[in-house]
Length: 113
Image (cartoon, rainbow, N blue to C red; front, side):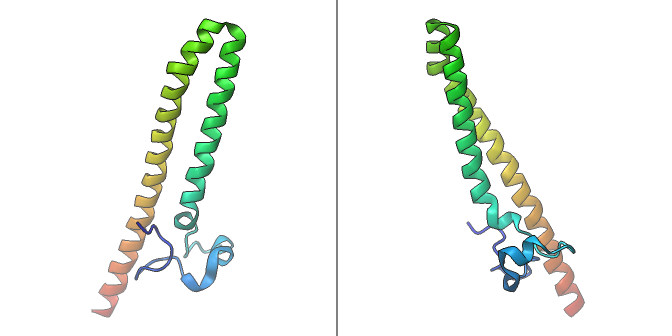
């Protein structure tokens, strides 16, 4: 699924601007969020995994039993819940940008017709 890469009609993101052109567009007529959402998701997964590993190490430093419980139950539960949370937030951002794109397209069509 393509999220705001500038290829669909009515996209506020002007494809000719490119990534850096959109990044420094102070009028906010083009959006970079659709272009970097996948990268943000990957970075989030890596950071969540690092945090879970640190949590496991800290748990084992407390006791072997707590470490085992954390390794088998708590860390995987945290990992999956955090990924679900991040994914929902990123999808919400995409939905908001899609609404803006579709609204812009409807306004453009209204002016033509």
